[in-house]
Image (tube, rainbow, N blue to C red; front, side, top):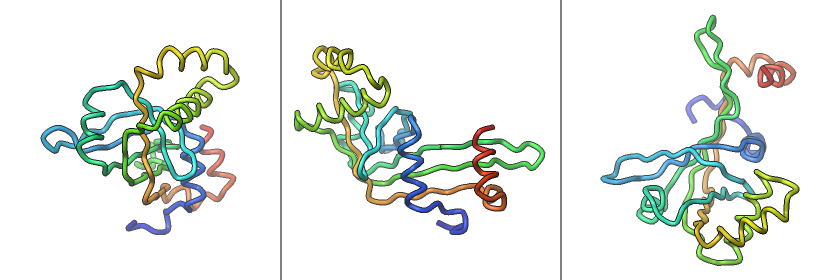
Length: 167
């Protein structure tokens, strides 16, 4: 990272992954064009988990090349009068793959279901019974994680950072 002063600690970057609910997966697509797709996800223990339909452009790209990155923007507070943005973001780099193991696939689907519809195990179980066979589970094993924040957030201190992220 060029501006090391703005770099977030690994703990801060992981906290952003744990808190946020959407990001953009970047892959090598058809004819080697970049392909970036927004996705819901869940992070756990150095891995990011996604679900997908059984076929499509994303699945083709995952199967073609295992290298990927995933970007999450936690904060994007435009400061018009300062001609800048107070941002906090994370990029994970790693290897992505389709999960074939049925037990791992079920565990991943439950994590995603619990994340986006917590405290409704009955409905989740029904959904997985009827839909898991039509669902592909994809896992990104993180090899490198980097986070960055706007320089304007550095000079404000922790209390101002929290206040700015609430606006």
